[in-house]
Image (tube, rainbow, N blue to C red; front, side, top):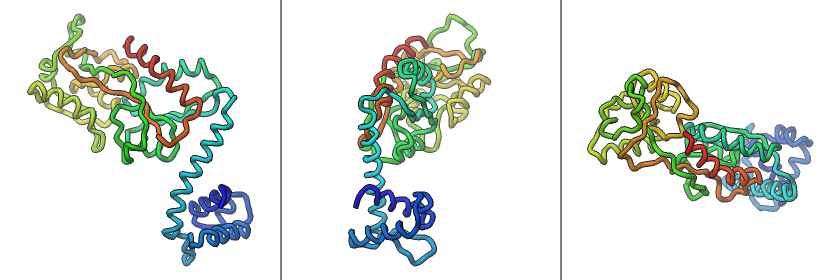
Length: 305
């Protein structure tokens, strides 16, 4: 069995019909049927149940499908790796970013594009679980994320490049901080305010991190709203609904005059940031260069915010 036959098999498995698979492969149906029969004869197993209108994978067929997908990814990535040797950095770089890391991208992309103008970007925003699925499906090559990265897949699948830590800051409605000289507050000061927290049914790590720090001081702020996104949280802060504690870099995507950013003088926690990719995946030249540029760009970005 060769790679061409595996492509035929996957097309049939995906389409559920030899006719549709043949059309997808730009070939006639009879040759494709013969190839399927040859594969089954060579393997000594039946790959599809042919009793219904739709072809259904047998247990042996499902096992082959899973292995074939992995083999085809590895084959395609190997071809891409060989082809890019000696070539300039070019093509499309597909990256994902959790919402709270989106503000980190513009400066890095600008520096990268100045150096490698032939590369274009495809950017997907989402939570850990959506981005993890896209990474597993090879729809993304890299993810910029808060750590630890939590998805529906095993953490052993991933490689992680840590980036410099991102300090947490307090975000309050400007009307609550009339003193322009105020630069920092303690957690005890902040616990007096009603609080907004970034939390969904599945993404709770940052919420837990912030409120564990309050608990360390014996404090329990009153939560007035759990928010599913950074944009919602900041909108409510700007409207005077409550205060929030978020990573410092988040505010660089939003600059409303109605929000004050205040350092927390006695907090010892920071948000950990990193780049995540699949361990078994060959990274393109553009992905490797992006990872080289990111750390210094992030340090510069953090220092000016």
